[in-house]
Length: 433
Image (cartoon, rainbow, N blue to C red):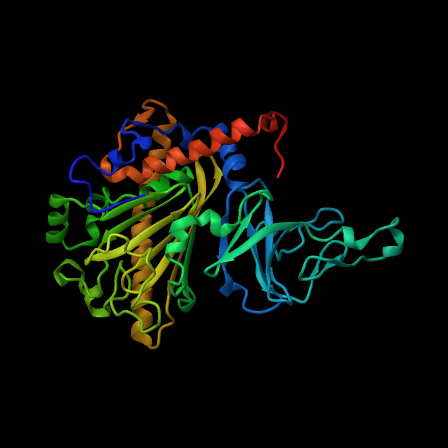
């Protein structure tokens, strides 16, 4: 469903009556039982992005991902086989359950290249395709059939160079899951943007609270006012900010906004350093000369706004792709580790720089983004602490916060549907991965 421009009567929110307009209950962001339900209903049963194919450039390339959001201790290996296929496996040796791939610290992620995987404990070996190929002193075992003891696979599919996994063998295919929003941005030149800047941090809040912060601009004139000149900050605060377009293809969504044109129409609103390096929060001003940016996929800038700047696609549950008008993109991921804690990851992707000035322009964009993200994150622990007191249990949301309504409703609906169809006592008896 798409609505653009904003309806002359009513509002974005009222265009989606299933979302309602009443205050929203935020118990889903502090209740430990609800968090446990989300692990079972959402993170074990939806497609999760775990990286890009550029991290697996040749046969034998691999990296590991720690995924406590799925279940405590969950670790997987992503590897490119000799046949060029990207596969995923649980990072568990079939002999005594030791973690198979790790370096100095078993709880830390690692990457590299190998011909086979060898367990550090008893030297059992596995091929890149997950087959058990060698057992130390095999004769000491009883009627062992190596073909029955390969690595445990995890469903793995690749879309536009993004690697996804799903722990539910009964889930539909990835393309079907991503739906119209995914289809609409196929063909964007993701593969040309291989210069990467990465940030990762543990945040003391529920994972949905940080998603909330990045799916509305109502806060921007106030919280980020310091990033503008004093005069421009006052102007923005007086006039406010409103996005160009909202669209829901449940469970996913997109918000499209102005800003980010290169160069900015009003150079007085940016700082001297931005003008010198021709860069800033919205990325380098000079669009790279690559195929795919002149004729963008149909899902980009869905409102066809002449002053379009950025689209933020939310692929439920925890993956965001932001496509910027100047020709770069970034991703956000939110990995819950408790009801009130999550790991935030962000990656900024640029076309590799051709000279020192282009490199500095990208670095300025990266550090400016980090400052903005810290400003957003700085509010989250205070929010988490206060909602956890339960003094107030329902919170007003304005029309610009319609995506927050959609996110929390979607997450609650997943949990409710799971409870209806899985009438077991998993949590009482101890859920398994």
